[in-house]
Length: 260
Image 1: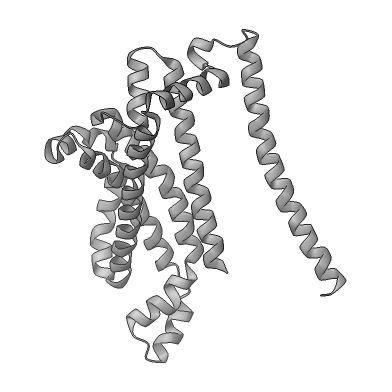
Image 2: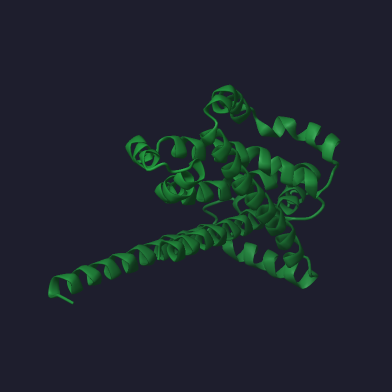
C-alpha cells in the first residue's frame, strides 16, 4: 500500500469519525439544553415535557408491561407495510417500465392518487377492511406504494438508452436487460426509495393508529392527547423517532453489505 493510499484511507476514517461525533454531539446538546430549559422554567413543561419526564414515562410503561406490547404492534405494522409497499411498488413499476402503453394510461391516475390526502380515505378503508390492523396497513400502503411506483418507474425509465440499445443489438431478452442493466444501474435509487418509504410507512401507520388502533405508539399519542397527558404524547413521539432511526440504520447497514 502506497503512502498516498494510506493517507487517503486515514482521511476517510477521520471524516467518518467526525460525522458520527457531531451527530451524537448534536442530539446530546439538544437533550441537555431541553432539560436545562425545563429545570429553569424557560419552557412550559406541561406542553414540551422534559427528558427526565419522558424517561420516567417509559419506565412506567415498562413496569406496567405495556411498553414492548405497544412497540411490537407498531413495529409489526411498519414492517408488513414496508415490505408489501416496497416490493409491490417495484413490481408494478417494472410492469410499467416493460409496457409503455400501460404506463401512459396509468400515469395521470398515479399523479392524482398521490395528490389525494390519504387520511380522507380513512373512513372508507375502515368500512371496507374493518377497524383492525388491516385498515392500518392499507392506510400505510396507500401512502407509500404510489410514491414507490412513481420514483422507481422514473428511475427505470431514465436508464441510459445507449446501453439498452447495445444489449438489444446482442439479442438480449427484456428480462436480461432488466436484470443485467436496469436493476444494477438503479441500485442507489432503490435504496433511496427504501429510505423514503420508511418515513412514509411510519406516517401511514400512525395515521391509521390514530383512527382505529387500541394499541401501538400512535394509540399512546392519541390517548395522551385525549387525557391531556403531554408527557405520554412526547414519549410516543420520541419512541417513534428511535424506531425510525433504527429502521433507517438497518437499511443503511444492508446497503453497505450489498455494496460489498
